[in-house]
Length: 458
Image 1 (cartoon, rainbow, N blue to C red):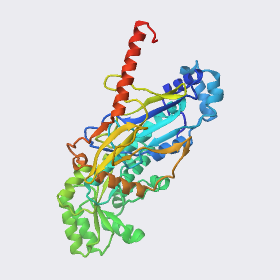
Image 2: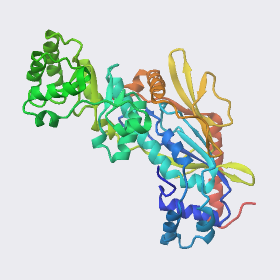
Image 3: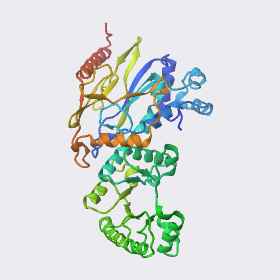
Image 4: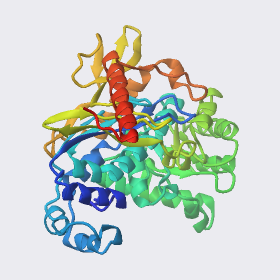
């Protein structure tokens, strides 16, 4: 698990500054959200929360890490107590509210809200963004792929194309919580309880004297649970070899070629040979669009393995997520803050997101201040998951998250779920929040004008 140095250098320089100015006990609230959805997405699926909580639970600096930080030239001006006292006892002591994993989310909505002493809330920014945004990217892609499969199982096959082994494990977990039935990544199965599945490689077939021998030897070891890869040489001929030898594998996998025509030809051969129960699985550079096309064409494919496109979210590999300060403690009370930069303005104050439903399904989201009464028929999405640095709920099983995710995605308007030209889901700001934003912006603008003129507010 990464430690407290999984951060950007300026987080450390700011933390040292806060300690020097005596603000290490000042509480502050930050919110993590995505500014805009990628052009290819009508919705996102929140993921990564479990790893974020685990990170916060074990967050600390080791003596060796502190010794290294002392050598950084950017921290030469830091007070000795920052190294000698603050960093050795560094622990996360704040509160975290978050949207449950597997929940569809939209631009401008807080996914995670952190309230903690200012240096703590600042230092965890980088790791929280990296953890939440990456897994949310993958979960969002997985939801699209599994939706395209129309109820046929999808396995995540992309570990070898992921951006490192840690990313591969997290991608496998995110894909499975958002709809995939399994992953080929064994370590993800070991660490996260994700179901694992797999077949064989072309090298197994090529390493034997002939294809049939390869199939027979594999089935001698693994029996009727075997899934045989049949496209190393000629998929149709391989299917005939299987039938002719009296083999009865659980399935065969196609990894190349015209999957519609090949699956139909192989299905005919298997059925004629009494292997109606042998499934046909397909893989090979698939994504949601190719899977949807295969399903639409009526290809007799029983399940899909999706790799690179899924484990890298290749059409939207990065989310424009941010982590912004929205309130700070001043004179014993929380004061709302907002950023006024052109194109990057934020809303002030700690917020809640309410999902409003009708008899026909989900209709809109409302972003409101935390102390507002929610709208009628609205459900609050952000829930407390960490209090005073302590986890508030056990980790949820992947199959439980997957079931709730699939139900939540299915409840979205059809246009929002479309793979192409999705309609925009309505996210509105409450009147009190909009009014507060106007007041804070006006006060900030007025204060800025006074500061520019050299005057002081009375």
